[in-house]
Picture 1 (cartoon, rainbow, N blue to C red):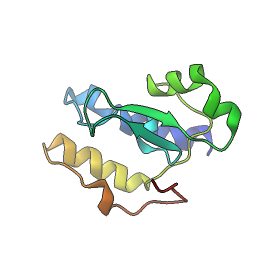
Picture 2 (cartoon, helix red, strand yellow):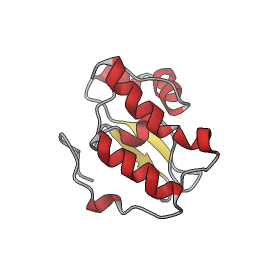
Picture 3 (cartoon, rainbow, N blue to C red):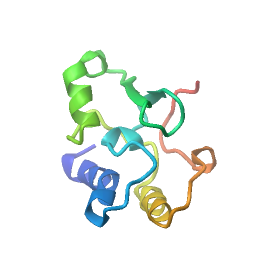
Length: 113
C-alpha cells in the first residue's frame, strides 16, 4: 500500500489524541493491519501486537515492529478493514460505544486462529 493511503489509517489510529478521548484499543497502525495478531487479554494494556507478515524480514525485525506499534509508519501494512469501517469504529468509540470486531467484514485474507 502506498504511503499516502497508509497515512489515512495511521491518522485514524491516533485520532483520539486530537479529541482527547482514549479508544479502548491499541492505537497504532497494527490495529488495522491484516498481518497483526494479538497476545494478551482482550483490549487491556497487556495486549501486545505480534507481526505475522509473510515477508520474514519485517516480521522478524523487532525494531520495525516496535516503531509501528509506537505510532510510526510501517511499509508492510495491509489493511484488514475498509477505511470507511475504521472511521465508523473510531466514531463509535468516541461516543463511548463498543464494536464487535467479529461482525466486521475484512478485506484480504486474515490467517484464522
